[in-house]
Image 1: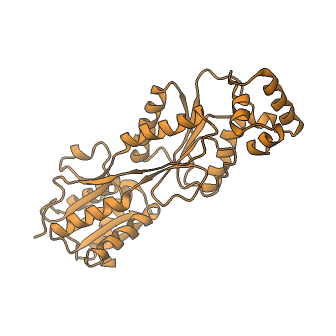
Image 2 (image 1 turned 45 degrees about the vertical axis):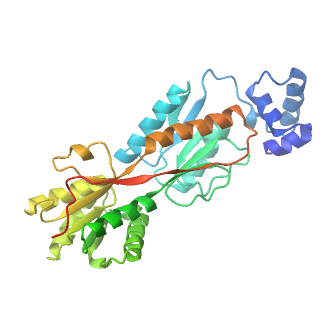
Image 3 (image 1 turned 120 degrees about the horizontal axis):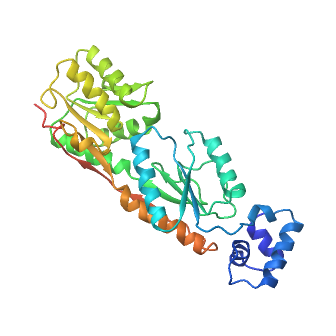
Length: 324
C-alpha cells in the first residue's frame, strides 16, 4: 500500500501521514495512533515506520569504486552530506540495473534510509512513496519519480570538436571501452555536424578498461601504420595508457600526436605533459544534490520534480597542439 492510499483511508494528507511515521511533533498523538492502527491493519506499518535516528542516513549507489571519476564524486558528496549533519552509506551497483532496483527497495523499506543518490537512469526503480531520490545521469532522465542531475557531456564534446576543428585537426581518433559507447556516438555526431570527416578505422573500442584499454587501443592504431593526428580518450585513465604506448613507440607528444581525455581527474594537470580534458563541475552539483535531498526530507509532501544540468567544459593543456 502506498502512502497516498493510506492517507486516503486515514482522511489525511500524505504530508500528515509521512510526519506521523517520522515522529514529527507537529502531529497529535491521537492522529498518529489512528494512522498507525490503519497501517497495522493493512500490513504496511513496518514498511513506513522509522524508529528515531540521531542523524539522517543518505545512501549513495555509484557503479564501482575502481574508477577515479566515481571516487572523486563519492568523496565530494560524502563531505557535502556530512556538513549537513547526516551520515552516508555506500553500495556499488556494478552497472547492474536489476541489482540497483533490488537494493533501492532494500535501502528504502528495510533499512529505511532518509534519501538515496544513484548514478544511473533508474529505469527499473519504482518510487511510489516519493522517497528523496536523486539520479545522476549522462542521458535524458526517464524516471519521473526522482530529481535528476544531468552531466552535459554532449555540450562538452561539442565544445571539444569545435576546438579540434579550430586547431586544424582532420584525422581524429578515439579510444573507448564497452561502457563508453554513448561518448563515441556523440563524438561522431558532433564531428559530422561540424563538417569534419569521421574515419571509422581511427575509432577503437577495447574489451579492457582503464589504462589497459588505452594501451590496447593505441597498439591497434599503431599497427595500422596510419595514425590520426589527435586521439580523444573516453576518460583520462584510457588516455594515460595510450600515451604510455605512444611513448614506447617513440612518438613525441604533442609534436607527433595530440591527446585529449574526458573527466579531468585530479592528476591530469600534473602529468609531465598536462593532459587536455573535459572538466565536470561536480562540486557545485554536490551542493545542489544535497539541497534537493534535504528539501524533501524536511517536506515529504513536496511533489514537484527538479532537473539540474551540470556543465562540462574543455580544459586545454599541453597535450593538444595545432595540427601540422
